[in-house]
Each structure stands twice: as C-alpha cells, then as structure tokens.
Image 1 (tube, rainbow, N blue to C red):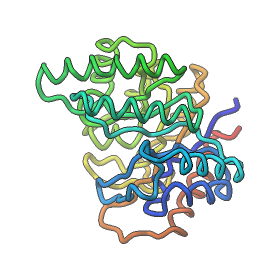
Image 2: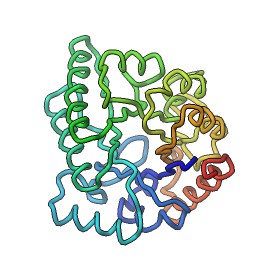
Image 3: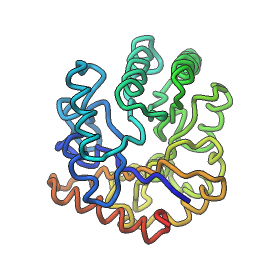
Length: 280
C-alpha cells in the first residue's frame, strides 16, 4: 500500500514552516501538514510570524508555495484550527483559512477544531457552524478533519455523537493517538480507533506514556503507550492510506530542544514507522 507519511510543521517548533520544508526530506519523507496559525499551549510556542497564515499577501503566499516546489516538498493538508466554532467570527476565520489552504496549497484535507461548547445553545451553534464550513469545504472538493480535543471530539463516544449531529459528508475526523490518552484516563487507543475508523480522514501519530493530562509527546516510538504497528493494521483493514502525520509536541518542563534535536526526533520517528511497516 502506498501510504502518505507526513510531518506536522509544528514539530520544528519556533523554527517555523520554512525550516520544516527545508529539512523534511533529510528526515526521509516529503510531505508536510502545514500550520496556518501560531501555537502557544503546553509549552510549545510557535510565533505567528514563522508560519504562513491566511493574512499573508499574495506575494508572500506565492513565494512560499514556490519554495516548497523547489524543495520537492508536498503538502498533505493544512492545519487551520483555532477559530471558535461557537461564534460567527470564529466560523468566518475558519472559512477564510479553508479557502486560503485550497487556493495556495491545493490540499483536499484541512485539520480543524470543534471548540468546546458548554451549553446546549453553544452546542447547537457549533453543529450549525460545522455544517456551514462543511458546505464551503465540499464546494471546494475538500474534507475537514476534526482534531481530537477536549469536548465534542474528546473520545469515540463524543466523536460518534458529533458525526451524527453534523451529518455532513465533508466533516470527518482527525484521529490523534496521543490526545486520546491525554484527555481520557484509562482509554484504549486501539478500541477507540476501531469505533470511529470509518470517519477518519487524517491521523496524527503522536506518542505518549499513557498518563492523562501528561505533556509527554516524544519521538514516535519513545513513549511506549501506543502500538503504532497495530494502528497501521487497523487502518489498513479499511483501506486507509493516509495522511499519517508525525506530531511531536515535546516533553513538559524540558528546555527548548533546539533545531538539531527536533530534527533528530523526526528522523527517529520515521525510522520507527519504517519498522512498523508504514513504508512497505
């Protein structure tokens, strides 16, 4: 099976998307999941100025797209998360990012969030707004893959409920192996995947040592709580070929590892995935 193996640009931390593009082929893969926003959570800080956001002018976006082509790097999808889907403003932001991703990087998958509604009214707003952005994605020939985050996509029960409520062919799931364990004490990452696998359109391969709310996301293969070979086998069984995206968010309390160590962790992750049959 010809699987798409990718790397989330956030793995390169504050070095940003340009450095990710320049380094990733040396790690043994040629695809990136491209962040379209900064990040500041759990100790992983990525300034907005080192990513290419939807606010970029045409010259900036065009130059970066050309840079990717020169390097022979492909974009497996764009990560557009961050818009608050409970609000009109957050929904409009998500729509702009979806359109930007399609226009400049010609992707058919974007990874986004479903926010965290706390009342029935907010829940209804999230469902309605996910349908709205789903319509935009469908019009553009795209799929939105909702990230495994606290709230409506926290675990299989929540994911299946949300998929039933939204009931939109362009709104599906990003399954994050590490986040399932982070947000759900005692969860079985493989049992959870079995229940939702038919809705999965993107996968974040993130390792963990299995403790809830434990910011421990090392190189894939270093955590010990996830059988990545079994993850592949589960998805092989339904013909899923990717994207499988390496995501390394680091270890809580550690000093900034620096570019060389970040790159080394990605290379070790690729080696582990090779041993688990992802490149067969």
